[in-house]
Image 1 (cartoon, rainbow over the protein chains, first blue to last red):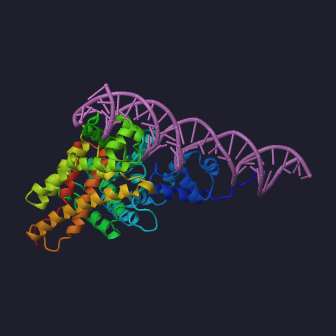
Image 2: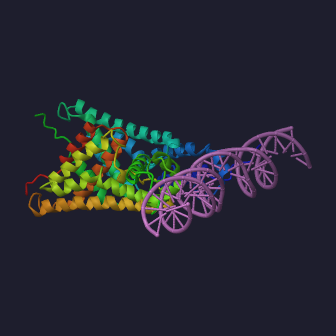
Image 3: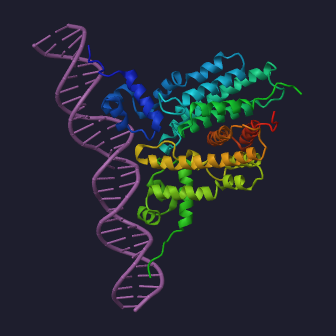
Length: 198
Length: 198
DNA sequence: ATCTTTCTTTAGCAATCGCTAAAGAAAGGA
DNA sequence: TCCTTTCTTTAGCGATTGCTAAAGAAAGAT
């Protein structure tokens, strides 16, 4: 009944994801996106709405692919400690991988934003807070199960591991290798409270 | 012999510093800068050269003021461990201070850059690497003085503490309080290797 | 008072920004 | 074969980007 789209929408979204990952939201122009996707602006706007919605969809795709290891590790490991250790180890591999841009899109994708794209900054900040809350929930489980000393500051531990993960992202963008990040992960785990309930 | 400047160059530079700190290099426009400084573009260009040089000068000023605590702590403390602990504690206070934008200008000032301002990104990356190298030097001192177990991976420790500091910057931008960051600093110090030379 | 110098201002440059109207092209229904 | 629909393309919109030419204004030297 009507003409069909001539480009692969998923492939175009993946291309946009990688561009946003490399340079961030504001620094990635529509011209750069359309050139990388091999389409013209009207095709982009027909398929994705506008730049902000394209970014949001790219971030959602990121969370379901490159960034999915976090949710998986937190859901699958038996203890909070094991879950966090796995998140750190997999982040070390993922952030330093040469198959795609370094670091984490959610952490670095919208750091330098003008007032007109503050809502994009807030969107990613919300995702980061969600991740920190998920980490805290697993730590709370360990506390409730007696695997942590009574009175352990679980919110403090969650903030610490969130900070370490964000620092690993920055370090990878500055050139840190997989091995470098694994060492960071290992040292971060050595801060885990010992189980003695003195 | 000639007309003199009608605005305070230092005050204008401080204003630019704060604007860049808040939104980053690319997201801060000349129009925003001149409005905040209370001057017109030709005055800005006559006094500072161009946007890139203004940013570089603002960063230099930042390192001599808000960011000077790092160099001071690393220079003044008797041991590497004490120096790093003091850097972390002062970063917690500085990053969360309500007297100025959150976090660290060197860490967050040029994260999302297009190809045309990649050199600005590289400039800050260089400063971050300098800071990490300064941290490593103090840790090496502790190893040489026998305050760390023989064979300690000092480069790994330096990367870890650099990552924690960068994570603290991100956390503060996401709303973490002084107390939150102090807890991160405390946990990070608990990863310091014990002195026993097994 | 006039000259020289360097500031200030007004005004606007070329280039790019995100985005879109209008026209041409493909695909199925009648 | 024509119609309808939705894609594609070309072309360019108004606004903003970093930056600057040209003119007006202040300050000391002569």
